[in-house]
Length: 72
Image 1 (cartoon, rainbow, N blue to C red):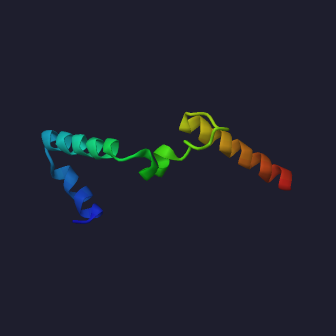
Image 2: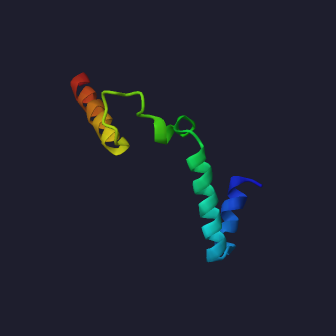
C-alpha cells in the first residue's frame, strides 16, 4: 500500500482507530534514532548553534541573509 493510499484511508477511520494509528506512528518515530530523521538530528553536531532547532534555524537564516546582503 502506498503512502497516498494510506493517507486516503485515514478519513474513513473511527476516532479509536485514528488514535491507534497515531500511537503506532509515535512508537515508530520514537524508536528511530534521531540520525535517521534529518529534521530531528540536523543540529546535533553544530556546537555553534542553539540546541533548540527553531532557534538554530532562525540563526542560520539570519546568517544567510547577512551573507546575501554582503555579496551585493
